Image (cartoon, rainbow, N blue to C red):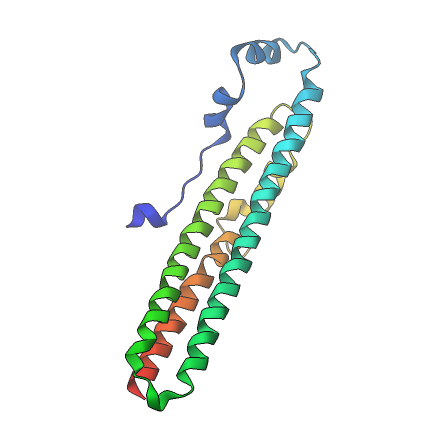
Length: 179
């Protein structure tokens, strides 16, 4: 189970051989200005934009699951208000739906986190060929996400949202069953 919960990130040195062809390595070592700097800069801009789009899709995923959870929880609440005609176990269907959504939400957020992590490793490798390395510098300034007092990555916090929703749903079901 730990294998599925733990995430790892490649090092820019691991992806560089796949990013650069042999001729690019030879030109870099020779220091020959071959006009590739502008091409690399454009590829860098495009790739950073793609990473930003993944983050935007992650935000839309959060909005989708928040809306869907709200809809199902509200529907269950409306049905449950006339409690005298309803057995508590009928709430198990919306509970199961909500818990399944929370699990799917958690794994989608994890997947987006892994995808963005990989994208930023490639960004770091691209920055090796540019005159500045803002992403690596920022990441270093933030302690590379290892020290929560410096920076606690949003994606780490974000994954707790579906978990906390699931806990609240189970607790609410248990309270309703015992009442």
